[in-house]
Structures are given as structure tokens and as C-alpha cells.
Length: 581
Image (cartoon, rainbow, N blue to C red; front, side, top):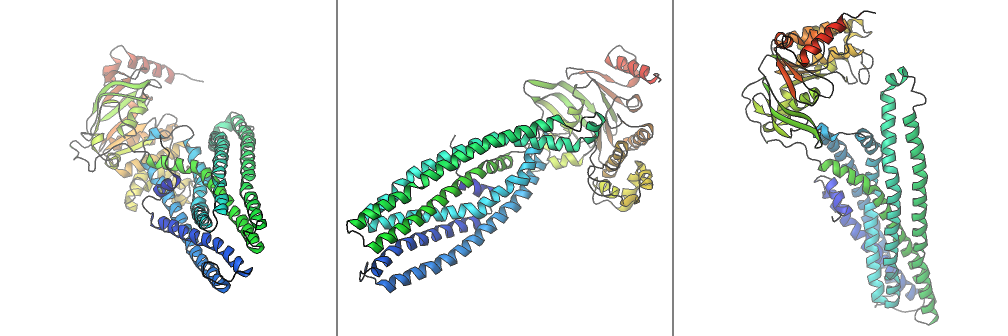
């Protein structure tokens, strides 16, 4: 597959805001042409200074005037080129920060896998600025260098073909050395890429799982993090060796051009083809030209170093969310949920659900039970269309979720999961997320119903207490109450509870069961749970088997009256309730 050029990728990264970038490229070309003409004009100026009355019909002061005009023009153009390049860099940073956030929010959960958080963290903290620097400091000067090189080579060919060829012949060799150096640098980057991701992921894991680690006595040292950092250090050494080899090759190749030019200019001067002053000027121009070429290839290597970051950014931006219609069809049965012969697997080789069919009527309560890995949580995710089914249909509100916009599906749902995340802010702020436009009275009623009022009374600043990052200042049960309050406030026709009471104490569980009863009066409630108090009053209980198929369904009384998995589950729970310490 043909690789897209870096310039094309940079234009794509600007997401249509390419006017400033194109202007910077045009100014770079103009600046390069002026720079090349300036280099070329030095030699006839030296010839007239050395004794020639005129060169190309112009005398010494006329050539000095041309140099002055070129110098002023170059300074003005360079100023506007630099400003335009910096503005393009700022445009990219703004576009990328907002764009990648919007894109991530639109992607299905299946896109988020192991290492995604670490890779995104590295992009936001390191790679983003690397690409921005390409816009501001590398692309435009490199284009200027390329334009000045072409201009100088063309004028030197016209002035003296031998000097022109001496400038041109080493360029392919320099380009080849630059490509080889680039490959070496990429080899070093490839060594570090996976190691950086692993180290970032383990660091995030270490920071966010301190409670679990300390309870196991494994927080210091945390061996997975230590191993990842050690591997990263070893990888840095290997990457450094590749980088040193690339720089050594590039440095050796860069000497080819000035040495060749000095030899040719000296020979022409000794033969009388050039005056001594013109020969010295020609050598000086060649040295300056050599620096331009070396800088140009160095900037090319710098751009190539940031290319992987750019490719990653574009790969994220090119990811397509799940397809959805331009407009949703009208919901025909608000509050209804239906699985119709659904088959689904996170990977093609490992299906999770097999031919699952069930229906939840509006304002009913459905309980889903089954062993771990039977697909209970997967069904909740399919209802919310975090994924698309492999076969069959999931209907919400009487319509296939694929015939509705994602925002319209989400508007019909409130979801309460076992692991609740609260955002940094007050209790009120976190509850209001359920329905931002709700009045203060509505927020307070939802909070009262969910038992959050009791929490506020115990906190030092009451309702204005900051719950901390992730809600760490609250217990797990208290965070669940806040999550329930969000669901109550949203007033969605369908409420999903995924193991919401599995690890709660009696007080918190009582509050949440009371909320479920309240929600049941106005919403369809779908509960994934194992506690008998939660599921025994459901209108329908769906029992999932270990292979992801539905093995039983019915009311609690009907299911315990017949042999099967549910009765075994019920009897085991009853025995467990009679245990005592």
C-alpha cells in the first residue's frame, strides 16, 4: 500500500483549516527562491569586486543593490512565514485537542482495549507537541531549504555547469543517507513505542489501584511497574544506539558536498577559470549551501520522528463510529426492550451470546441472573449500543437500535453500574449530570429519594463538598447512591442496573432497592443481580447459561417450582443466608 506523504497527512490533520498552512507553504517556497538567488548573487558581486567591470551587464554597486533588495525581501517574507507557521501549529493543537476528544466520545466501547489509556495519555502529553513542533519549526524551514537548493543549483548550472554539477551530484547520495538515517531512527522508535505504552499503562494502573495493591501488600515494590520501567530503560539504550548510528551516518554524508565544492572551486581558480576572490566566494557559498542542505535533511529526520505520532492521531480520527441514520425513526413503544435471536461475540472466535430472545414490556421489571461470563453485562451494553450484534436485533422503544441515532438511544436509558465514577466537583454537580437543565428542586428530590441527603448532612461542607477525583472521598455505597440519584433525575423510560447492589451494606442496599421500586412505577427496570431481595419481585427473570444462551425465563414462583438452574441458584442463596460466623 502506497504511503501517504507527510504533507498530505498534515493537511488532513488540520481538518479543513488548511488556508493558513497553504499560505505558509507558499511563503516558504518564495523565501527559498529568494535565499537561493541571494547565494547565487554573491559570486558575481565578488567577481566585480575582484576586478571585472561588469558581470551580466551589471557593475559592483548594482549587484550590491540587488543583494540588499533580496536581503530585505527575505527578512519580510521570513517574518510572515514564521507567523503563519506558528498560527498553523496553534490551529492544529486546538483542532487535535477538541477533535480527538469528540472522536473518542463517539467511538464504540469495543475500540477501547488494553493499553488504550496509556497510548492516549502519551499522545496528549508528548506526541501532540511533537506534531505541533513540526508545523511551527520543521515543515516550513524544510520547504524553504528545498526551494533554495533547487534555485541555487539551477542558477549555478547556468553560470558554470561544472560548479552546478558539483552541487547536484552529491544530493542523491545525501538523500539516500538521510533515508537510511530515518530508517535507523524509526527502528529506535519502534523499540520504544510498545515499551512506552506498557510503562504508561502500568503507571496508570499503579496510581488508580492503590487500595487493592495495599490490601494485598503489593504496592511497594509493584513488580509489573518495576519490570515495565526496567524494560523501558533497556529499550532507551537500544534506541539511543540506533540514534547515534543515524547521526553518525548523516554527519559523514554531510561532509561530501563542501569537500567536493572546495576541490572543484580550487581547481577552477588554479586554471584561471575563476578569479581568486570569486573562487573564495564560491567556496563560502558552497559551505553555506552545505549547511542549508544539512539543516534541511535534519528537519526531514525530525519530521519523520513525529510521523508515527501523526499516523496514530490520524488513525484515531479515521476510526468510524457505529453507523447510524441521519435522523431516528419515531419510537413506537417507549420503555420497551427486546432481544430477537441475538448472537454476539467480542471476537469472531469467541461468541458470548447465542440466539437470545426476550422482551421487556414498558414499566415492567426484568431481572437477569446467571454465572459469571454468561453474557449478562454484555446484554446491557448491547441495549445501550456500545456494540452492534453479529446477528439478530436489539430493539429499544420498539425500534432497532441501529435505526436510531446514538444520542436518541442514550436519551431513553439511565445506566447504573457496579463501578461508579464520580467527577471532581460537588455532590450537586455530580447528580445534575443526569439532567443538566433540571431545576434545583428536582435535583434535591432525586437526591432525597436516593438517600444522598443523609450523605450531605455528614460531610463537612454539605452539598458543596468536593467529592474528589473519581469520588474518592465517598464510600462505594455512597457513590452508588449518587449514581442512582442521577438515574432518578434523568427520568429515562428505561433504567439498567448492572450488579448495582452486589457489594453494598444493608443500609445502602435498602436505599437502592427503594429507588428501584420508585423507578419501577415510571420506567422499565432491567436488573443484573444475584441478591434474592433484588430479583424475586421482578415481573420476569431471565436465566443465562454458561454458554451464553438463555436457559430459563419466568416469574420467581414459577422458576423455583421447576427443576433447573434458577432453583439451584435460589437454594444455594437460601443456604448462604443461613450461614453464621
